Length: 291
Image 1 (cartoon, helix red, strand yellow):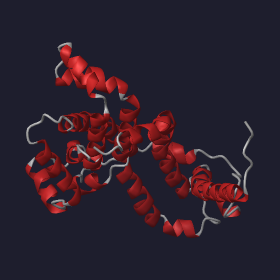
Image 2 (cartoon, helix red, strand yellow):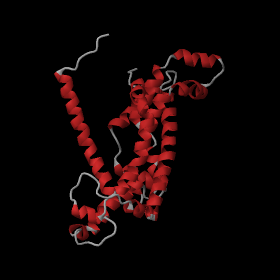
Image 3 (spheres, helix red, strand yellow):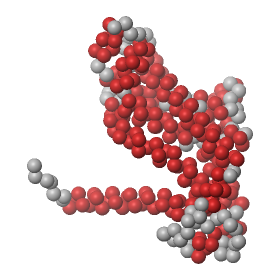
Image 4 (cartoon, rainbow, N blue to C red):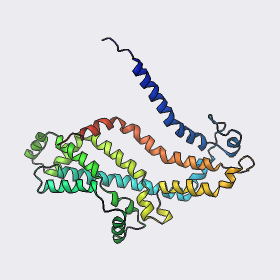
C-alpha cells in the first residue's frame, strides 16, 4: 500500500499543534524551574530559561508544614472515599433508570434531567447542609456532590446499549438484577467505568468550593484551599521581600515554596492520567449513543 504524502495543509496543522503544545508546556516548565530556584539565582537571572541551580529547599519547607500534611490527608480521603461513593451510587442509579420495566421510569428520568437545567442555588443547599449537621465535617465535601447528573445520563445510555441477550441469559440462570449488574455488565465495562472513575477522582482531588463554603476548621481544609492560602496570603505577606530580592538574605525563595506546592498538588493526577488515558475515547463513546 502506497504511503500517503503529507500535504501543505498537514504541515500547517503539525506546525499549529506544535506551537499549541509549546504554549501549554511553557507555564508548567516555568513552575518546575521556579520550584528549584533560590533567592540568589533568581535575583541574578530574572527571568531565566535553564535552571542555574537545583535547590529543593522549597519542597523541604512545605513538607515540614503540619497543615500541609493534614490538608493532603483530607484531600486523599475525599478523593478515595468520594470517588468510590460516586461510582457506586452513579452506577446503581444509571442501571436502575436504564431498565425499561421500571415503574415510573420516564418520570424519574425527566426529573433527573430537570435538575441539569434548574438548581435550587447555593443558599438552599447551604441550609440543608447546616440542618444535617455537616458544617465543619469532611462529609460536607462528599455528600453534596455525590451524584453527577450528566455522568448518570451517559451511564444510562451505555447500559441500554448493551445486548439484552446478556441480561436474559443471566436471568435464566437464576441471577437477579444486582447480580446481572455486578457479574455480567460491570466485568465487560472496565474501560467505561475507568473513564468515569478518573473524571470523578479529578473532581474530588480539585475540590475546593464545598470546602470554601462549609469548612472553617483549618485542620479540615483540603489541599486546594491550602494552596489558595499559600498563593494569596503568603504572597501578600512577603511582597516587601519580593521587591528587594537582590539585597535579601533569605535562605528560601518564597516563590519556590509556592511552586513546589503546586507541583506536589499536580503529581498524583499526572501519575494517574497515563494509566487510564487509553480508556478515554472508547469509554466515553460507549455511552454517547442515544436511546
